[in-house]
Amino acid sequence: MKKMIVAVVCFAFAIGVVCGNSEIENYRKAAEQGDAVAQRKLGYRYGNGIGVKQDHAEAFKWYRKAAEQGDAKGQHNLGYCYENGLGVKQNHAEAVKWYRKAAEQGWAYSQFNLGNCYYMGKGVKQDYTEAVKWIRKAADNGDTTAQYALAICYAEGHGVKQDVSEVVKWLRKAAEQGFVEAQFKLAQGYATGELGLPTDYTESAKWLELAAKQGHVEAQYMLGCYYKYGYGVEKSAEQADFWFRKVAEQGYNLPEEALKNNKE
Image 1 (cartoon, rainbow, N blue to C red):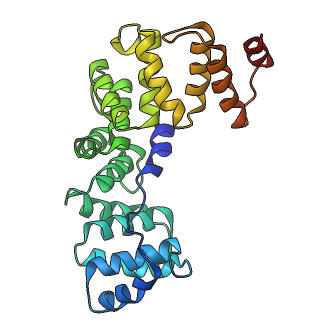
Image 2: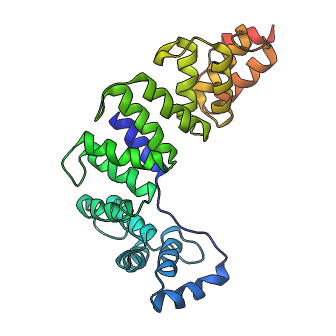
Image 3: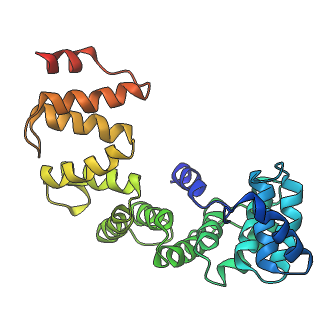
């Protein structure tokens, strides 16, 4: 679970708006006059090197100005800088402080990141119950990373009682919004009958295809096998070969037997 949370937290990145280079001076003028949104957007441009040379220290400076005025996105971005040591010395306690401010304003990315801090014990004492509280808030706000993480919490019984029906509920919510790992987990569930799901290869193939089209290598391999043997789809050597080659194109070793048999 810890590895999962670390992996998925990358989806909760600093938020900003990309705009044309000609607008940067307008942002700077507005920012210098105290406009919090302009301060945050100017910080985002410095943080990502958009229209200016990338400068994390300058980004941090403008995020702080926006955050201190109560701008939730600026607070989130400031927390992100503290968590990752961007333009400032890494400080998890400060990250928690600013994530909390944004989270309390309903900003889903901060709610998830705050929950993750509680889960991992970064900047606060580890507390699975508090972690789930904030992860759930983000999930209820539609954040797919949080929905997937909440499903895993229910699967492992961290901060909540194990409940396979809740696992499926939150996996489905994330999967329907395109979260690839949730799509793959659902596909596995329908293939094996786990998670209280009925064994249904047609439904499994549906979710595998959605994940495979997003480049999920395990889904691509499984879908290739489905087409090779006719599980949930019409048997097709051509489609099997197509998906096996997708796997190979990503640099994964594929048994030559799989490709050879599909040519016969």
